[in-house]
Length: 197
Ligand code: FES
Image (cartoon, rainbow, N blue to C red):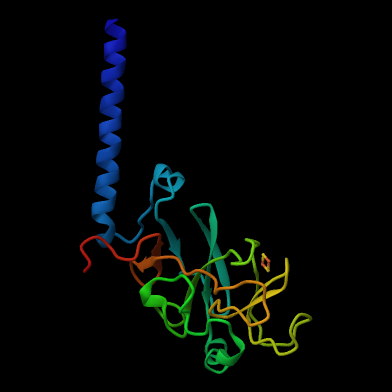
């Protein structure tokens, strides 16, 4: 009996200290550079950190958030310059019917012009689109201007994740909430740091 009481008490103390640590981590978010969510936060679908210090122009890296691939793409000027002229070929050029945070409802669909953050899941039936960064003719599009192509049923998206007319996907690729901790780190899954207005 006494052993049981001691065990319950020990569990309570351990649980309390874990909550304390998690609370401290969240409170420290605005002030530290290497913010790492706990395994428990990750499995519960909490925010995840992405480091883009090694991401080069034209490249894509991927992290997982809530079991979904998140694409981070650093676009170069040539890629960004394609965006303006594509409106007439797109289903939702101004992202009116698509999902993104308010800060990403713009031409480049992002907070910082060059960095694109997208949920890497096709808005048709959930395949993962492939990244085709080069502005060169492709077998699926002779006038390809860089972006994403979903081979499952031929949906095409530009380099902002906007869907082309004629694709079975109905809306643009989703932009998740995210916030920058500094120039090289961002947190996916929250759109402002603690204490930010
Ligand atoms: S799942 Fe991408 S086009 Fe159908």
